[in-house]
Length: 450
Image (cartoon, rainbow, N blue to C red; front, side, top):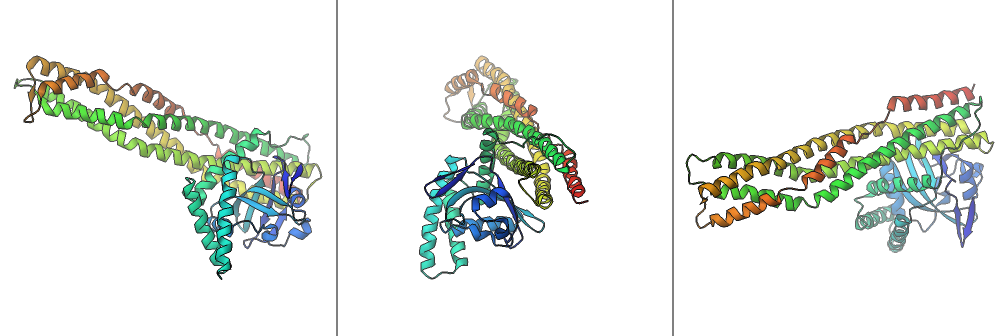
């Protein structure tokens, strides 16, 4: 489905398309949707450089950043303005991944306007600067490097620390919007055709990634809850620090008093709690980073699964050819998605477990501060408060201690709930099963060639 708005050609959410290039960017495979949107035939595209559809309004810096990521073996995601053979423009959100002997790109309609709209404005500013730089006599390579620097600065202003963090944020949202529009692996009547088996296998992997995405939602709830909770860390730390200070500023005149022993116990527990409080922010940042990585990797797998399923259905419907080569490339991409996803999932599970232990330790230490602190207060009140620092007002310090004790640390209740969420958060990815399913695809392709 496509329609025209001015000089721009727009297309439907379900119109996913892909191309495969060699290591130099020369096209060696496309699908029907790509051919239709670009208004080039497969014969015109295959063997041509991918920049055959490049639009002059696209900043060279965007492609420079993309190639930098790919040459390091990382996937890249970028909004791209293309120009079809008939002169019409069309925007895509492109996801590109390395293959053993080239690159695979899957494109979809941009859906996340909250990100897409400001990116178009960034592109306009960067491209205008590139043109001025080129007019000053700089080479294409110099223009690309200059544009990459400017675009990186633009991304930093938009709170992205670079091109990969941008991709990590953009892909999951674009894919979620796509799925929300009902774009799924198509269903067809089962048959003995190997392509039918591939389609069923893609539906199974889609269910696997559905479950993983649902689990990541639980992690996000934990991160959001902790993010809110940590806004009060300063207040908790100040109160805890003050409790530790008060018990070191006042003692009892009775040499046989229990005050010094109880004071030492309070200070010990406060010190442990303060250590954990200082670590919580770094743990939260680490959990956010690893969950973002899992979400990105899972989104890559989901996208390639979806593209494989859509292409397999098109082959069954008689709408696409060269199925074995294209699906073989997509299967290779799925393996590439899976390998880094496995350790990322384990990292998320390990961090959640560590965070649970830290939070429970903090809850325990803060809860166990108040009882000895109250005993300390009663003792110095009964025995007479003796200031340890010259000029200190012992009675004022005791009154402050009473107020601190009455206030306590009510935040431990919500922290205990968050610890329970951390214990309940799991990431289950049955990698051996997914590998078996990808092998099923390869075997089905092999039968097609017999």
